[in-house]
Length: 173
Image 1 (tube, rainbow, N blue to C red):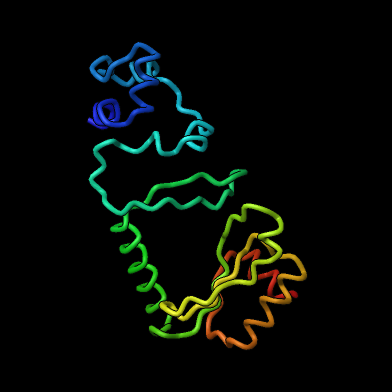
Image 2: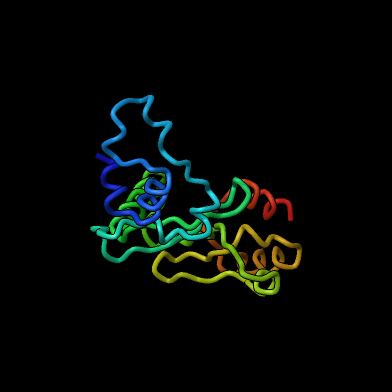
Protein backbone atom coordinates (compact mmCIF):
# COMPACT_ATOMS: atom_id res chain seq x y z
CA UNK A 1 0.00 0.00 0.00
CA UNK A 2 2.79 2.43 0.88
CA UNK A 3 4.67 1.83 -2.37
CA UNK A 4 1.47 2.23 -4.36
CA UNK A 5 0.66 5.50 -2.56
CA UNK A 6 4.18 6.88 -3.11
CA UNK A 7 4.13 5.90 -6.79
CA UNK A 8 0.77 7.54 -7.42
CA UNK A 9 1.27 10.68 -5.31
CA UNK A 10 4.95 11.54 -4.82
CA UNK A 11 6.54 12.95 -7.99
CA UNK A 12 10.13 11.96 -7.27
CA UNK A 13 9.32 8.36 -6.32
CA UNK A 14 7.21 7.96 -9.44
CA UNK A 15 9.99 9.39 -11.65
CA UNK A 16 12.66 7.13 -10.09
CA UNK A 17 10.47 4.03 -10.42
CA UNK A 18 9.62 4.81 -14.03
CA UNK A 19 13.33 5.31 -14.84
CA UNK A 20 14.06 1.91 -13.25
CA UNK A 21 11.17 0.31 -15.16
CA UNK A 22 9.38 -0.84 -12.01
CA UNK A 23 5.74 -0.43 -10.95
CA UNK A 24 4.17 -1.12 -7.54
CA UNK A 25 2.46 -4.27 -8.85
CA UNK A 26 5.93 -5.68 -9.73
CA UNK A 27 6.77 -5.88 -6.03
CA UNK A 28 5.16 -9.05 -4.65
CA UNK A 29 7.80 -10.44 -2.28
CA UNK A 30 10.79 -9.36 -0.20
CA UNK A 31 13.17 -10.44 -2.95
CA UNK A 32 11.39 -8.08 -5.36
CA UNK A 33 12.44 -5.09 -3.23
CA UNK A 34 15.83 -5.18 -4.94
CA UNK A 35 14.09 -3.84 -8.07
CA UNK A 36 13.27 -0.56 -6.33
CA UNK A 37 15.57 2.37 -7.08
CA UNK A 38 17.78 3.67 -4.27
CA UNK A 39 16.93 7.16 -3.02
CA UNK A 40 20.11 8.96 -1.97
CA UNK A 41 20.08 11.39 0.93
CA UNK A 42 21.51 14.08 -1.33
CA UNK A 43 18.35 13.86 -3.49
CA UNK A 44 16.19 14.61 -0.47
CA UNK A 45 18.47 17.45 0.65
CA UNK A 46 18.56 19.14 -2.76
CA UNK A 47 14.81 19.01 -3.47
CA UNK A 48 12.82 18.08 -0.36
CA UNK A 49 9.58 19.41 -1.85
CA UNK A 50 9.69 16.62 -4.49
CA UNK A 51 9.09 14.10 -1.70
CA UNK A 52 5.78 15.62 -0.57
CA UNK A 53 2.65 13.82 -1.74
CA UNK A 54 0.68 15.88 -4.23
CA UNK A 55 -2.49 15.04 -2.31
CA UNK A 56 -1.03 15.72 1.14
CA UNK A 57 -3.92 15.83 3.63
CA UNK A 58 -2.06 18.16 5.98
CA UNK A 59 -2.78 21.88 5.70
CA UNK A 60 -0.34 24.32 7.28
CA UNK A 61 2.84 22.37 6.68
CA UNK A 62 6.13 23.69 8.07
CA UNK A 63 9.72 22.94 7.05
CA UNK A 64 12.38 22.56 9.75
CA UNK A 65 15.99 21.43 9.48
CA UNK A 66 17.28 18.40 11.35
CA UNK A 67 20.20 18.95 13.73
CA UNK A 68 22.75 17.99 11.09
CA UNK A 69 24.34 15.36 13.32
CA UNK A 70 25.22 13.24 10.26
CA UNK A 71 27.18 16.05 8.64
CA UNK A 72 24.66 18.61 7.39
CA UNK A 73 21.00 19.32 8.11
CA UNK A 74 18.12 17.95 6.06
CA UNK A 75 14.82 19.81 5.69
CA UNK A 76 11.92 17.86 7.19
CA UNK A 77 8.24 18.63 6.64
CA UNK A 78 5.96 18.79 9.69
CA UNK A 79 2.21 19.33 9.83
CA UNK A 80 0.80 21.96 12.19
CA UNK A 81 -1.01 19.10 13.95
CA UNK A 82 2.29 17.32 14.60
CA UNK A 83 3.91 20.52 15.90
CA UNK A 84 0.97 21.04 18.28
CA UNK A 85 1.19 17.47 19.56
CA UNK A 86 4.97 17.78 19.97
CA UNK A 87 4.51 20.98 21.98
CA UNK A 88 1.97 19.25 24.26
CA UNK A 89 4.32 16.31 24.82
CA UNK A 90 7.19 18.66 25.70
CA UNK A 91 4.97 20.61 28.10
CA UNK A 92 3.89 17.36 29.75
CA UNK A 93 7.45 16.17 30.41
CA UNK A 94 8.38 19.61 31.71
CA UNK A 95 5.38 19.55 34.05
CA UNK A 96 6.34 16.07 35.27
CA UNK A 97 9.83 17.44 35.95
CA UNK A 98 8.33 20.05 38.27
CA UNK A 99 8.08 23.11 36.06
CA UNK A 100 5.07 25.37 35.86
CA UNK A 101 3.59 27.28 32.98
CA UNK A 102 5.24 30.70 33.00
CA UNK A 103 8.55 29.59 34.54
CA UNK A 104 11.55 31.31 32.98
CA UNK A 105 13.57 29.06 30.67
CA UNK A 106 16.88 29.48 28.96
CA UNK A 107 16.73 27.20 25.97
CA UNK A 108 19.80 26.54 23.83
CA UNK A 109 18.71 24.95 20.59
CA UNK A 110 20.16 24.27 17.17
CA UNK A 111 19.98 27.05 14.65
CA UNK A 112 21.42 27.05 11.16
CA UNK A 113 22.84 30.41 10.20
CA UNK A 114 23.08 31.37 6.54
CA UNK A 115 26.40 33.21 7.03
CA UNK A 116 29.18 33.41 9.61
CA UNK A 117 28.37 37.10 10.03
CA UNK A 118 24.78 36.24 10.98
CA UNK A 119 26.06 33.72 13.53
CA UNK A 120 28.37 36.29 15.15
CA UNK A 121 25.57 38.89 15.36
CA UNK A 122 22.93 36.55 16.80
CA UNK A 123 22.39 37.24 20.50
CA UNK A 124 19.36 35.08 21.14
CA UNK A 125 15.70 36.03 21.30
CA UNK A 126 13.04 36.22 23.97
CA UNK A 127 9.82 34.29 23.35
CA UNK A 128 7.02 35.79 25.47
CA UNK A 129 4.67 32.86 24.74
CA UNK A 130 6.97 30.39 26.46
CA UNK A 131 8.79 32.88 28.71
CA UNK A 132 12.04 31.59 27.31
CA UNK A 133 15.30 33.16 26.24
CA UNK A 134 16.44 31.17 23.22
CA UNK A 135 20.07 30.94 22.23
CA UNK A 136 21.75 28.94 19.48
CA UNK A 137 24.01 25.98 20.14
CA UNK A 138 25.69 26.42 16.77
CA UNK A 139 27.53 29.69 17.43
CA UNK A 140 29.14 29.17 20.84
CA UNK A 141 32.17 31.42 20.33
CA UNK A 142 33.65 33.17 23.40
CA UNK A 143 32.10 36.49 22.31
CA UNK A 144 28.64 35.01 21.85
CA UNK A 145 28.93 33.02 25.09
CA UNK A 146 29.62 36.24 26.97
CA UNK A 147 26.47 37.82 25.51
CA UNK A 148 24.40 34.71 26.31
CA UNK A 149 25.64 34.50 29.89
CA UNK A 150 25.14 38.25 30.49
CA UNK A 151 21.58 38.04 29.16
CA UNK A 152 20.86 34.91 31.18
CA UNK A 153 22.09 36.59 34.38
CA UNK A 154 19.63 39.44 33.80
CA UNK A 155 16.81 37.11 32.75
CA UNK A 156 17.42 34.76 35.72
CA UNK A 157 15.96 31.57 34.24
CA UNK A 158 14.77 28.87 36.57
CA UNK A 159 15.73 26.17 34.07
CA UNK A 160 18.37 25.61 31.41
CA UNK A 161 17.65 23.22 28.58
CA UNK A 162 19.81 22.33 25.60
CA UNK A 163 22.27 19.95 24.02
CA UNK A 164 24.73 18.67 26.61
CA UNK A 165 27.68 20.15 24.72
CA UNK A 166 26.02 23.59 24.69
CA UNK A 167 25.12 23.40 28.38
CA UNK A 168 28.71 22.34 29.13
CA UNK A 169 30.08 25.30 27.13
CA UNK A 170 27.93 27.69 29.17
CA UNK A 171 28.80 26.02 32.49
CA UNK A 172 32.53 26.21 31.85
CA UNK A 173 32.52 29.72 30.40
